[in-house]
Structures are given as C-alpha cells and as structure tokens.
Length: 402
Ligand SMILES: Cc1cc2nc3c(=O)[nH]c(=O)nc-3n(C[C@H](O)[C@H](O)[C@H](O)COP(=O)(O)OP(=O)(O)OC[C@H]3O[C@@H](n4cnc5c(N)ncnc54)[C@H](O)[C@@H]3O)c2cc1C
Image 1 (tube, rainbow, N blue to C red):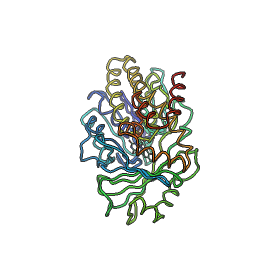
Image 2 (cartoon, rainbow, N blue to C red; image 1 turned 90 degrees about the vertical axis):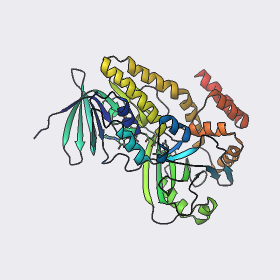
Image 3 (cartoon, helix red, strand yellow; image 1 turned 180 degrees about the vertical axis):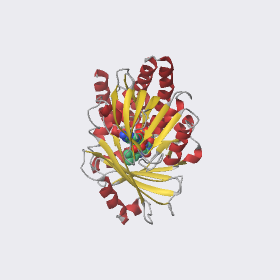
C-alpha cells in the first residue's frame, strides 16, 4: 500500500537544538513536520554541553538542567593555570533533558515529530512546493509536501546537498570522543581543559555533570591531523601520572559519546528562496571552542518567529531579516574566531605552554571573550594589551582591508 503524502507548511529536517528551537517559535497553527533520524530526542549524546550561566538565564534554561563549574583550570605539557572566571561561569548542560524540554515547547502546536525517520531527498515541484522523501527505520518511504524546508540537520547539511545548493559536507571537521564515568571522589564543580602533546590540533576537557558523572573527552580537527580522538583519549585515560597531575580519578566502565561538527569559515548565506539553514548546517558553532548550543537556540528561535511571518504573509522579507540578523551577530566575530582557530590548530607544545601561562594573566573579560568567541573591539584591545599585540594588530588591519 502506498501512503498518501503528508502535507505541511514547514518541513524541519533535524531535531537537534536548532530545529527544535525553530519549531518552538512558529505560530501554533502553522502545520509543521520535524523529521529526526534518531529514535529519541537528545540521544545518543554527541556533544559535551558546555555553556555559560548568563546565556542560560537569558534563554530561560531551568537551572536543574545544568551544572555550574566554579573551578576552572587549564593544563599544557609544562604549564598550569587557574582560569580567572567570575560572574558569568561555565556550566555543563544535561543535553538529553534540555533537548526534550525544547521539543516540549512545540508539543501543543500543529506539529508532527517523526522520530527514527531519515530525510533522503527533495525536489522542487512546478507549483513551488517541495516534495521530500523520508525513510523510516523499517525501510518504508514516505513523501512530504511542504512550502518551506529548514535544514537543521547539523554537519550532514542534508537538505542543501539534496537540493544541490551545497556541493558537499564541510571539508574540515571537529571530531570528538568522550567517556562518561561515575563522579566518585572528583570535585562536583570543577572543569579542566588540556592542551599540548596529548591532543595535537585540538584540545581535551574533563568536567563534572549535573547527573553526578565525570566526562573526559578529546576533540581534534580533521584533516589538520589524521589522529583518532578515541585513540588519543585512550592514551590519556591510561596514563596514571597524567591523571594524577590533572587531579582526576576514573573508576568503572565508561559510557562512550562521540560527535562531529563543522570547522570551516562562516558563510553568511542562510536563505535560498523557501529553503533556510540554521544551526551547524550553517556553521553556528564557535570557531574557537566549538560551542554551538546557545547560538542554535537563540537564532533558531529568531528563525521560528521570522519564518512564521513569512508563512502567514507569503512574503520573503522576514527570511531576509533572519539572514541579516545571523550575519550581524556572527560574521565579524567568526572571522576573528576562524583566524584564531586556524592559528592554534598549528600550535605545538611550546606555544601551548606559553598560551596557558598567558591565560592566567588575562582579565576575566578577555579570557571569557576568547572562550566564547566574542571579539568585540573592546575585548580585542584588552587582549592586545595582555599579550599577542603584534598578531592582533596585523589581523585587525587585514580584517579592515577585507
Ligand atoms: C564532540 C563535540 C563536543 C561539543 N561540545 C559542545 C559544547 O560543549 N557546547 C556547545 O554549546 N556545543 C558543543 N558542540 C557543538 C554542538 O553540539 C552543536 O553546535 C549543536 O549540537 C548543533 O545543533 P544542530 O541542531 O544544528 O545540529 P545537531 O545537534 O547535529 O542536530 C541535528 C540532528 O539532525 C539529525 N539529522 C541529520 N541528518 C538527518 C536526516 N537526513 N534526516 C533526519 N535527521 C537528520 C541528526 O541525527 C541530529 O540529531 C560540540 C560538538 C561536538 C561534536
């Protein structure tokens, strides 16, 4: 039996933070379908969930969904620093819970959530609508007719590739593996990052979570290195002297998480007629630390509001306004961030030792700016006066010329 096509106003491909946030802000009566290839929202875990308390307040994320890190430290081969963070502290999100909460914000709307369903192709029909094909886990294909398609499929860029709007997946990727252990005797409010020989072209992290666990992970940029993050992480967790230095105790069998995100220069086109991208499919994760969740939620909500206006008015002005907003918020910051990203990807142990020593001397605003990829003029000047002045000036001039 051939099922009749589903018809909707908006098809959202991907039920991660970006796609769910778009749906949360669409008007209640805009018929929306979200297709999500995983069986459950938020699982498997593919992200570390690092965030900042001020953003969580601003975005209305309930405090029970994250664990605040009061003590933050950085390690290089021969350097150690207490990172001088105050006020806006880092925190770790319980992402399965957060994503389910984001999904619940469109439960009351005219919205279907199709779990375990993969978007496989799309074509534009003569009447301007899109005919998409989705496949369920048991191999059944179904057609969906929609007026708009949102690509929220993350690094897969599934919709843009299917419609020939993007030729390939991103050529440079951040690839990470993380092990989750019981917290045991480890501090419940401490986070560390580690850099240098153990993590070429990337960085490592360890922190306590809201679930009473300890996560330790490694992320690298490929193809800058062909090292496997899992092998690097195995070497770290097997090195007792190193763990002692990091003040970590790992006990029991870990749960394994792994994930991928794009690590390419920001491109500011978001809209192709009635096809719109948001989240990692639009390179929203920060180039400095690969932090994307808060940006996906914020700009996902902005897109939901504008797309709602476009659907009801039939005009494309609101979508251009979304594109303009994303460009204004991210373009300059991400140019700076990407310069930092490509520069530090080449760092060796000597540069990391110097960097970690410098980090201890930076003021809170500068170090937060760097970690959050916030390169406002004031922050750049503060960084220039704390170190790296010649490099900052040269880049500032180059950016001005661009
Ligand atoms: C190792 C690692 C660590 C990270 N750490 C942090 C961190 O500490 N803090 C932070 O803020 N960010 C972090 N990020 C980045 C963050 O996870 C992403 O920026 C964010 O998840 C992007 O959200 P999204 O909704 O755009 O895409 P995703 O979260 O990737 O969601 C897209 C969803 O779409 C689904 N999908 C893909 N293709 C299809 C298809 N064809 N059909 C149906 N469904 C499809 C996927 O299964 C996926 O679940 C990390 C990323 C990685 C890889």
